[in-house]
Amino acid sequence: MYGFLRTPRWWGINIFVLLAIPVCVFMGTWQLGKFEDRVDTHREAERRPEPGTLSARPLAELLPVDKETSGRHASASGRYGAQFLVPDRELDGRRGAYVLTLLTTDEGKSLPVVRGWLPAGAKAPAPPAGEVTVVGALQASESAGAAGVHGGGALPDGQLGIISAASLVNVVPGEVYDAWVTLTDSPKGMTPVPAKVAAGTGLDIKAFQNLGYTAEWFVFAGFVLFMWFRLLRREAEAARDEALGLTDAA
Image (cartoon, rainbow, N blue to C red; front, side, top):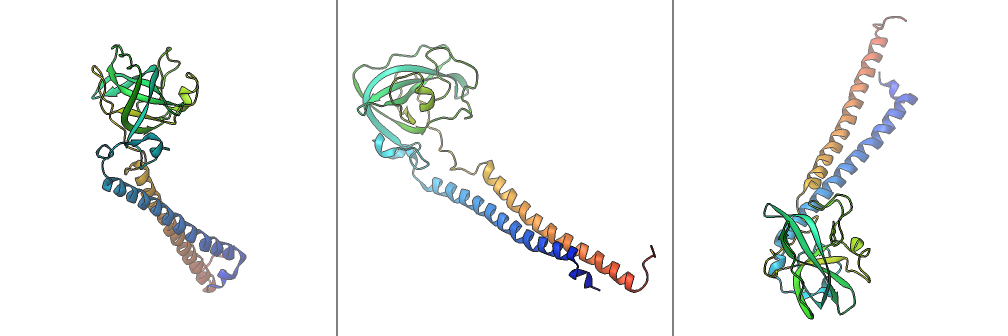
């Protein structure tokens, strides 16, 4: 009754099933591993001390910015230079702008320093003259698609849409650090800008997408096996009916 399993058609079906099920199980296991990695990263981030509770370290020791150093307090010395406004930034439900001033460090590179936040229309105070030492939370350069980042067209002179070395190298001479700091204590008239949480340290939507993909791959494996048994049963019933002469003659 099962002689049809030796036909070329069924050889092809069986080979497909034998290949498809391990692939589905492998992909499901891989997606589950990705989800578990995100969970472990989230737990490690929760166990780490708050960045603001750690003592400040020299800027050079914390670069490049990663999940471990993002939000850590960094110190740098130099002289303030060019100043810009970063508009369309929200703080405590109000719209305003960041005041970004470039600090030329002893290494000769420019460090973007967000000295604080101002409500829309307020005038930014001038930076202090002479040698200064700043302490602030270290942040990675922003991307154009970051939430809350200005996405409009060309901005007026003296304004920037995003805080990144890529945008600053076009408007200031010399090298720019691929990072920025937000002062913990802003000058009078400005509000300190809180540091952002490092990307990839929380259970975001991507983590649960991995979990959903895990379920999908295991469902695919079960579906392949279900269809194989269903087709096998149908073929076996057809072969039995033919052997008993119950099949209508063509």
